[in-house]
Length: 302
Image 1 (cartoon, one colour):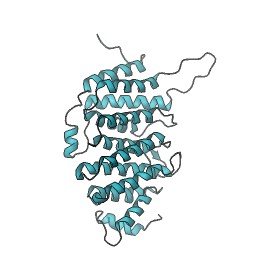
Image 2: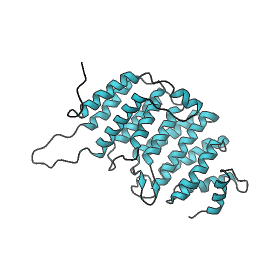
Image 3: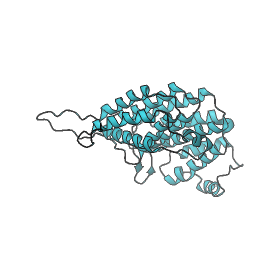
Image 4: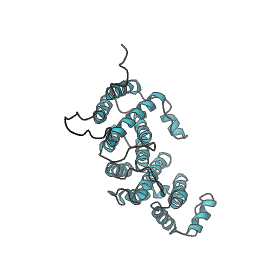
């Protein structure tokens, strides 16, 4: 597997206890490199659970700014590739960076500059990511969109992010959805993106005057092109239209039913009551969803 598999298997069997026979820097560098291994037994079976456990246990608390900066560099490994193994390092880096952001909610060890820096890097990567595959035959999960959405949701929880930064996160979601792509979401990416937006909404810092234009921008992608005489009709919906429609329906459903986060005191408090824009935003979503399929949905009752 290109790693000392027996060594790491022993650590996994120990409950991921931090070994004392090698420097933490060396262990971390090896694990981060393993995040990009095409073998899911290496990256998902060893590297990711070890690193996530150590982050959650506070192993990196005193080193979290530098650790996060190093992990964030992995977001750019092979950026621009599509259909190659480099996506595993980028997606894995997003997952780890999300955990580092969440850890700060407990440890309180990060300055706002670090969170803003990670947010800028995450936004730049997420919009530019071209490899949107979910499950890759013979390689396992890539899931760059899903892990990117989880990273946005982690950032949205951060108290370092206020109204301006949360508005930017919404724009990042819209930019990701509206950027031309060749993949139709089929592995829950729409739900993960919708949950990221729900996390923004539950901060109760954005009003419907910000949210309505944002929804209208997305709704414009749901309008099919006009028929042209003597011209073959393009595929419809395009991946952009299909993914955007799925996202808006997922957001409507999550807003209607409510969501829960992790079973932590902070998430229990954050998601314990509906966002204050719930009623107004539901009406906006109902309007644009009805308009997107006038031959399917009934008109609103008067």
